[in-house]
Length: 198
Image (cartoon, one colour):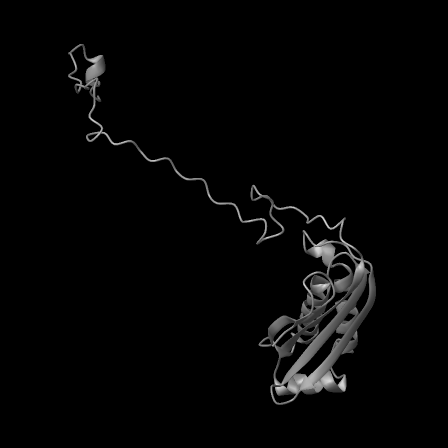
């Protein structure tokens, strides 16, 4: 049978003496944990002063012409590149489907990126180029609108989904394809002015 603790055995229990007055040196106070710093609103515009995510208010900004170009590429085996170029892929016209996918994705960027503003796009262009030296297909997406904010996310989303569509249509013959260098090439319009990637 397990022994009862001394508290229940009827025997007195010695308890450690506690001094009513403790020296500051013998019992240092635990320092208060500092609260995490919130991102500065002027640095990260999608956070307010308390660090909460929010959609940026662009209501007071004037509607101006905005243009953005984004690009990326997908590297693949030489045999896969030849099939894409010649239209011999099992799923059909790879670049034709990828072009439609890129356009559709750019139009739905605000559905995919949580704090992205929905914009009425006035133009979307999708172009492909074969890079034989690198055995890759390159995509370039140009988006344009007249509105209070830029269209970088629309162009970037279109480029990314266009490349993902190429991967999906060719993965049966080449699972080692690599999506690379999705990036903003150029941005025009708005307060930040003209950006051109080096």
